[in-house]
Image 1 (cartoon, rainbow, N blue to C red):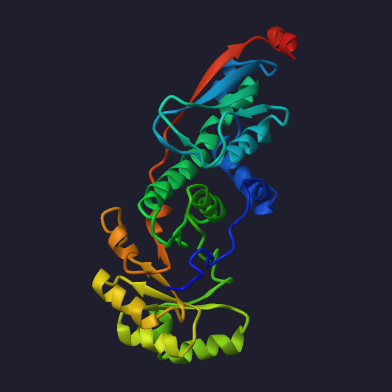
Image 2 (cartoon, rainbow, N blue to C red; image 1 turned 120 degrees about the vertical axis):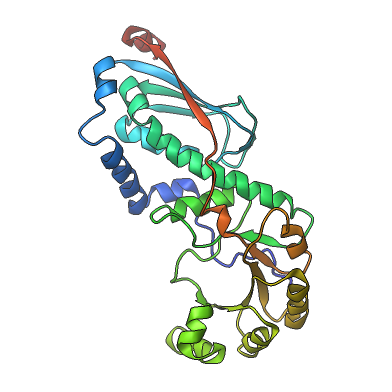
Length: 305
């Protein structure tokens, strides 16, 4: 087996604090408020005063892994820059039902109006982290790395991939620009694996190349091209093991296609370097978090400050 099984196919997306400095992420928050807040939160504005302050807490309603808490902070502070966000756990932490995740202090209106947007983001990210963690636990004693894919919600890719990292997984390519992946339709369009790889190397000699294969013949063709990665797509474990032996460490191998909790161990035991799973992000179940409000009056808030 290759000795580079701990190398990600792509660089990690970075910390959430780094992501929050990106213009695209700030635009995403604005779009979320444009969609949800529109011309105003009429209910909240009717039942609360503009100067009222409040406390709230986030409580985990299930067991799992938390991700995206700092993104939650950014959502609330979009409406109240002075809001106090006091997390009791960090991203990547395993939490249990009933655990108190965050204490919030700030504008009552901001806490109520930003609640759903913040929870939508953090619940999705925590759901991704939880599912990723569940898969990685099945691989703990094996030299294989779990990867995500590009099967993400448009606009949410960096957050989805960050959540995978928080859950213990690795990031595959971030987009079409940072790894040349020759898939089935590219092979058809180019007239074969060899020609496809040759054309890519002429156009972008700096890019690493991965070739998707479904047969041993295609694996041999990819090996002859000296590509860095070979994807073993939708292969039965016995065929995949044979393909890994054929590669013999000359390229890194990635298993992909119909990977589940039930078969991931068999796939990993074939000796592949990576296993990629689209279901980490494309059909995730949101992690259940509840926000509870504790209203306090303006004067008591001032005394506490």
